[in-house]
Structure formats: structure tokens, C-alpha cells
Image 1 (spheres, helix red, strand yellow):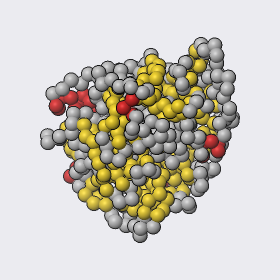
Image 2: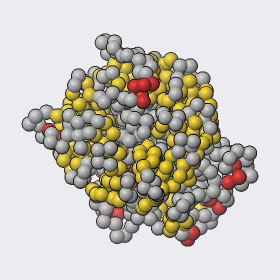
Image 3: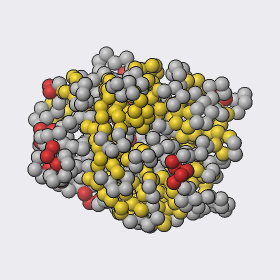
Image 4: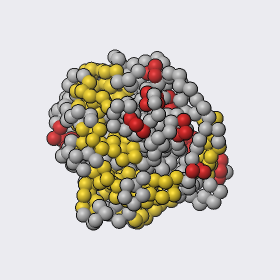
Length: 567
């Protein structure tokens, strides 16, 4: 692949010290060098210059229009005073983080027959003097951070088999780790690692095991080849154990009676050895998954009490099934169950085994071939891809949740054909429950006790807003159909500030510091599943579903005497 680099500003990037691995393990407080800032995935920044006392004076410092519609989801990644941000339609921008001045813009030259189901991108990774970008046509690209020119590119998967990529890469141990999308097309999912300097493949691990591999006996003969198991969100990493935790998506086809067995490692978190790619442990949230609850987001790494009250290294993950899971991660790899609690209403999971965490289903709700079933939460779950955040200051996990949405699904036989949908249903409809008093919310959970501490509800909107937590006692998030970007009191959920932007905000917020000044950044740009869900919600409540599209990078600063605009 050879993409285009558009006119650089005449000043260029003249001062860009190479990023070391130590800087990724222990980022400077003012930097946001990866998808969730730190390897643990907590989405937390210690910066506290913007805080509960002055957040009401937060106003735009600068903005930059991307010139693109559809869903803008990536975080503004900021290192050395340079912001790197991606958009739909294969663009990477490098901007002066303090002024918004364009340094360079890269546009990937995408293979003609690429057909991503989700035309978005979730950001870049950085190491040394390179910026790493996953293009839609399943190509991994390394760009020169100063110029935007391609250094190398590597084909990760074959687009003719309907593979594509939308996630932010993860850099760890000198490697660039990447996952793939395409679970609705009968792919065989995998995570792969590439040498950061050369682009050469270091290892590749399939998420659907072959018959002679551990877990292979949980699939019918031959089904593993098209078993799906996408890995389309960025993993989290423990540098001490050198284990990477990655989420694995739904099985293919959707109807579990067409592939009897537990179907490892779909609907699971897997622990991968960063040096070899070997699967060292796993935890499956939904066996024989038949609901499209592809739990692809990686759990947050945080210490928490185990069943005996001892503090252990943990994993916390609110999954699409509507269950918030607390798990123990071990240095050897195995993942142990601690507890699971419903964080949104659901009628499928009837019990969770106290020892193993294995769920029991109400079989009358489970989709199957030739039947029509209605179940809650919907295929988009209690939480889809938008990221949670954890604050070590409050000990609370913050969840962008959606409740009172269900799916009616009619299963059907399907035969595999390369590049074609391999789902297996005749119809799929979203429904809002008749007694729904709200849909979206922001929830705060104490991970030590498994108790919800507060919830801020949105009566007539879903919530598709990833969350940022800061040392200033704040959390930031958008996600609603009113185009608001908000700051909440992290302790009690009170809205302390809000600003109406040009479009709905499904972007991932970040915060950074340049020359001693803290900024908060986010992309506005409504699109993809948020739009589809909003249409269903608007029809149910009899309200307008119109949310204008169009991408803008917004950066905010505190100014004394300023007042945010809610218009």
C-alpha cells in the first residue's frame, strides 16, 4: 500500500524525540500515547489542572474539521505536543496539539473490494519515530511521525475473505499487535504481532482453535475454519507478566445449534504471551454464543479483592450480555472467576456458577434455526464497543450503559461462501421495552464490592460515549443524541459542565498537557450503530431522530469567566 500525504504546514514537525518503550510503560502525566493512555486500559489521566472547581469555565481552545462524515471514534493521541487522530475514510491527521495547526494528513490507498461493516477507525499507536495505523483493507501501516510518509506496510489478512480492520494497534515488547474484524462473514479470527521496525510477522494466533489445539474439541468437525471470533478492539497489556488480554467476538454462524459445543474462544477474554502469541488462559462469558454478544472489548486491569478478601491482580469487564465481571488474572495466564453482577436488566442469563462463573440460560430465549426469539439486552448489549474508565482516586468503574433494548431474531440455515455474510437469520428487529423509562446511562461501580454507587440516566437517548477519568475528580463523556459533551463529578455523577457540539459525540476523549497547560480533546461525528439505535429509540418515543453528521476534532481549555454553550 502506498497512501497519499497531503501538503504539510511549512513549519513541519521539527522537534519529535523518539518514543521509548519505557514511555509507554510509564507515560508522562501530560501525554496520551495509546488508545486508553496506559497499558491497563483504565482510561485515566492524573492531570488535575482542570477540576471540579473550574470545569464550568471550560471552552473551546481550537477545533479542526475532518471533512468526513460517519462515526468518528478514535481518541486524539498526544505525545511531544503532537496530536495524531484518525477518521473514517482512511485518514490520519497530525496536528499541533496546542493550536490545531495541520502538520500532515495521510490517506490510505485502500484495496478496491474492501467492504467493512463498520466504516470507522479507533486510532493509532506510537513507538520510536513511527505511527502505526490499521487500514480497513486489513493492512498494517507504519508512518514516519514527522512527515506522514509510509515506512512500511504489511498485509495482515485477505480482503477477498471479508477480513477488515478498524481498531487501534497495540505496541508492546517491540511488536505491533493487531486484531481483525469480519465475524459476520465466516472468518477465522486471530491476533497477530509484527516487528515494529521491519513489519515482519512475529507470530499469529487464531482465536478459533484447530481440532488438535486446546479448545478444538469444543467445535464440530470442520466448523473452526469459519468459526468467526473477531478481535476488533484493542487489547490491554501487563508488562510484568508479559501477558496481553484481548477480547474475542461472536461465533459464526450466529445460531448455536448449527455448531454444537462451547465454541472456544468466542465471547471470551484470552491471555496471550506477548513474546510467542501462545494462549495462556481464557474466560468465556457466553458458551455456545447465539446472541451476537461478541465480547470483544478487553477488560480493564485493576487490583481488587478475590473471594477470600485478598487483594489480587484483577480484570473487570462489563460485557454485552449485561453482566459486569470481576476476574483474577494470574502471572502464569489462567483467569479465575470472582463475581458477576447484572448492570442492566436481562432475561437470558438465569444463573452464574459461584465457583466457575459459567452462566445458565433461559433456553426459551436462546435463538435457534427456524425459530423466532426475543431476548434482552439486544445484540448491542448492555455496552457495546465504547470504553469504560476506572479512577484509582475513587475506586469506581464508569460504564457507558444501555438498558431496555431487546432483539427479535429469526434463525435460518446458511451455507458458507467466501466474502459473503455467514450469519444465519431471516430477520432481526430492535425493540424498546414497553415500560422503558430510560435507555442510556453512565454508571459508577465500586469494583471492590460489586455495588453500583450512582447512575445518571438519559430518558430518550442511548449512550454510545467512551469515558475519560481524570485526577481532577472528573469524568468526561458524550454518547447521547443531544450532541452534548459532558463533565461529571466522579464521586456522585452530577453534571458540572456540558457543551453542545456540531454532531453527536461517539469519540473517545483524551486529555493532555502542553507547556504546562491541560487540555481535554474529543472527536464529534455521529455514525454507525449509534445512528441505527437512535432511529429505533426515536420511533418508540415519538421524537426526532435527526442528529447531524460531520467530523470535528474539539480541544477545550479553561478560561476565567468563560461560560460553556448549551445551544
